Each structure stands twice: as C-alpha cells, then as structure tokens.
Image (cartoon, rainbow, N blue to C red; front, side, top):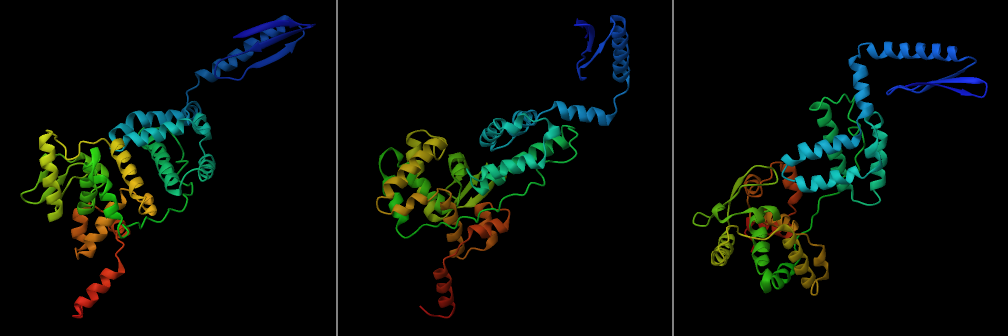
Length: 348
C-alpha cells in the first residue's frame, strides 16, 4: 500500500508491502512523490516475480517456523506411536512453555540449548537433563530427515551432556524384605505382598507386572510370557518354584473376583500403595524410604547371579539386550563369592 501525505511544506511518500520493509521519503512536490512511489513499486514487483531459489525458500521456511512448531508436530505425530508416550507428551508440553520455544528456527543455535542445560542443573538431576536433550535432539533430527526442514545442522547434537550419574547399587538390607511384607500382608493392599515377592523372584519391572494377564501364565510348565516390555520385544521367562507358588495363590484370589489380569491395579494406585508400605516399614528401618520398587529388579538380577546362573541365562529372564547394562545391575555380595571359593576348596 502506498500513501502520500503533506506535512508542513513537504510531501511524504510511504510504501508498505507484506514481506518487505516499509520505505518512506519526503519531496518538495506531490508529483515527485508519486513518481518515487511508482519506481519503488516497480522494483518490488520485479523482486517478487523473480524465481525463488531453493536456498531462498529454505531460509524463508526457517524464518517462518518456530521451535514450538516442531515440538507440536513431533508431539502429535511421532510420540503417539511410542510406548512411553504419556511422559514424553508431558515433557514436550513443558518444552512448549520455555521462552526459547517461540524462537524461529533461524535462531535455534547450540547456545540456546546450552543455556537451557545450565539452567536445568539447578532444578533436576543430570539423568533428567540427558533425557531432555536426547528428546530435543530427536525432534530436530526427525525434522531434518523426515519433514524436509532445511536445518543446516541439528542444534542439539553438539550440546555437551552433563556427566551421567552412576547407576544405583541399592539392594535390600537385612530385615528390609520382612518389614515390607508385614504391612503389605493386611488390608485392601494385600496384593502388594505378591507384587513385591514376584518382582524379586522374576526381575519384572512394575509396568510388566501390571500388564501380565492370566492367559500369559503357564503354571503347569513354570513359564510366564511378558507380551509388552520396555524394549518392545516380548519374552518368555522361567519361573522359580516360589514364583509358581505365589502365582497359584494369587490365581485363586483372582478367580473369585473374575479378574483377567494378575494385578488389576492402575500405576498410580500401585505407587501410592508402595509409598504407604515403605512409610509403615520405615518405623522399624528408617533408611527403607530410599528404596525404589525398581530396586527389587536390581535385587532379583543380583540374586540370579548369586545362584550361579550364567549371564545368558540371566539375560533371558531379565530381558536385558545390552550386557553392559546387565553388568551394571549385577552387584554381587562378596560373601557369596567367598562361599563359592570355600565350596571349591572343600571347606564348609
């Protein structure tokens, strides 16, 4: 749009057009102002009719697309296909609330995410920051590889990750299991006792325990099929005699209520019951409040090795595909190795 206005003894001409900076100039006469306007408009017309190169189109796309656009698209298209979609959606929504989410992609630099990393160190653990940077890296990589977003590089790829925390080595201390089983053996959460015992006997994760149906359990042959695992691959595990006994008792209770799952409990109710159980147990052992349910999986894997099972046999039960990760879970008690040495030497 072009306008000519008289101000004092001058004629002010102005040309405004979408996608171009506004231009203005003052003239002594009105005809001069109109001639200048026609020249500017002809210049703009010539620019707009020129073929747009691929580089120019890419630059325009980066300037008009924000980081939030990529986060939203990833949340709505890529995340729903994942098993852990709920926590990832929550994490992406949290990213959308960050000031840098409104930046155009032309301003998405490693420095932006380095500052974000540094800010987060005051509030969350290094492990959380590593996972957040990993998700952001996946968003930008997907945009480059699958959405044809012409980013010259992934801005998160070169952001230094904080030092990964050492894996937990928490195992059950003497008396802790008994103190956990006592409060979980009474009341409406009596199912928790079986869940705790099964976690130790099978090494199953909490989510795996809650997803097992009775159709997955073969008590006659001592086998249990875990259809959905963290790695996305189902596995069939052998059951200890104690696990068979626990499941048999649990099955009788489930049949009376016509339940299809071994544990018909939602994750939130499970976590609440676990926390309450620990709180009651802490009256005898205060340090038990530090125990996580996932530590029982750690306990199970360590016990399998202490029983003399091979690495391959333990991996079959636990579902670990990375032997390095399996070794991290395996913190054998030195006393058990001493016992093996003595048995080998014939010392009782």
